[in-house]
Length: 414
Image 1: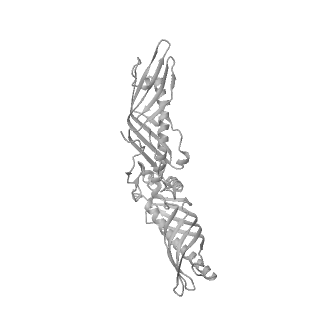
Image 2: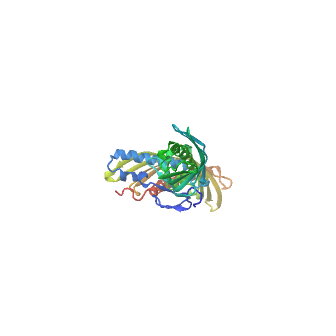
Image 3: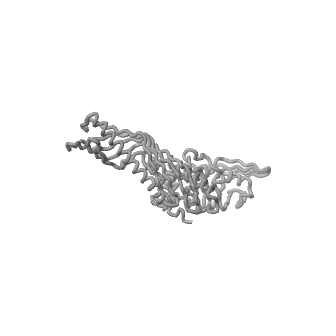
């Protein structure tokens, strides 16, 4: 019997971006639904129709990225587990001339699944969950009566090739995950109901309204809802894993922003390192426009990425004109950084970005750096100017690199 963890751990799946990471739950992409891959299967459509489809898929991707930006390394636990048993309520079914009651009903077999996979579909905004069991059983007591006969005893229902298929939304999954899914989410290939008394064995549920009602309307509803509830935390983990390669800022903070050198008009030399930046989870992202030219293999996306209210510290090594060295940490604040990349999703090398930085403030401790008031103003101005230049160069380049690394290498191969 398989362990009761809903999704197999430590499975490594190669997916559609340039890197591979181990998956903590068993999930995979539907590659054909990734934004840049949609045009391959839409070549008979007009450029405008393709634009709309890709825009919607990309927007779905951005919405999920925004939800998880800065949090992809949060703890993955708790995982969802199947409990092997599901209790089914007592059920009384009325036919025209028969009463059939099922009581003390227990479904068993959830942990012994053969397949369990979550499929991420970007374009239809969908998470598809598939679970399969070779067999499962329901056992309990029954009471049968009509106008001339009464029977009671134990029953045993054997189900072969049981399947759970359910679709939930990809975007806003944590907010809109359903508490109940349709009973039709459960299906089966064959069925056999046996009774300890004098009721004959039933192998075709359509021959018994009471059995069909109990199984497909009552039991399957409770089983489906139980599976959906158990799967929810794993779907959240799968989504976080799926969007991880698409998130530029994977943590709230980043200790790896590049340092820089600067100087003041009066000759003070400044060396900056150990830059620590906080607030990267406050990143606004949108797809502004899509333009498609299939004849010339152009899938141009214009996006917007804005980081609001960044703050942090960096280490300042100040050398005076007399070669005296002072070292201290400075504090900085940035109102926002806006990056506007334009990229061809069919060509990873076809990208340019423009970065605008608004209201950068740097605060140094003049006493620890042995600065006069005028020198403090001069140093702050030099630090702001050069830090802005450094950040602009960084984001103009690295955002395009990041967007290129997100693309499927087969995009545009048609």
